[in-house]
Amino acid sequence: MNLIITGNPGVGKHTVAVQLMKKEDYDLIDINKIAIESNCIEKDEIGIQVDVQNLKKSMNKMILKQSLIVGHLAPYVVEKIQKIIQERNNDDSVDWLSEINERNDLQKFFDY
Image (cartoon, rainbow, N blue to C red; front, top):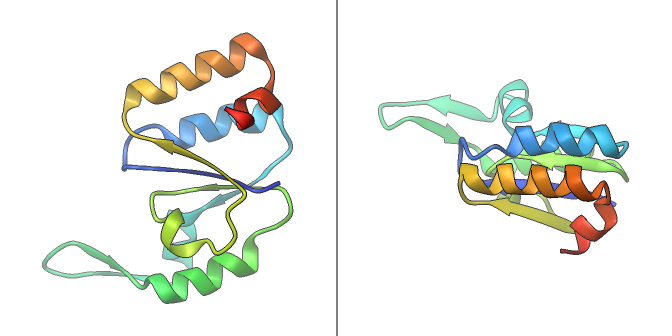
């Protein structure tokens, strides 16, 4: 099963990913890292622009059967989504980490 963690920058997506990877065997796919390595970003006077179409092509070549995909661009670059966690603020990630650690039961967490 592929799992996606998405949300606004800075909300704790990678923090949650690290905790999930301690409990399940996932291959981490960091969308931001792939965007940089695939030359899909360009800085201009407005900020950083992402070539979403090329990033989508790069992403879908890398996704495995048991991938944990992390990044705020996930809804735009991942074609097949099985399970998704969307974070909205830092309090969410703290609550989710507590829930995972207390219950030690990812299946219930995924079905949440």
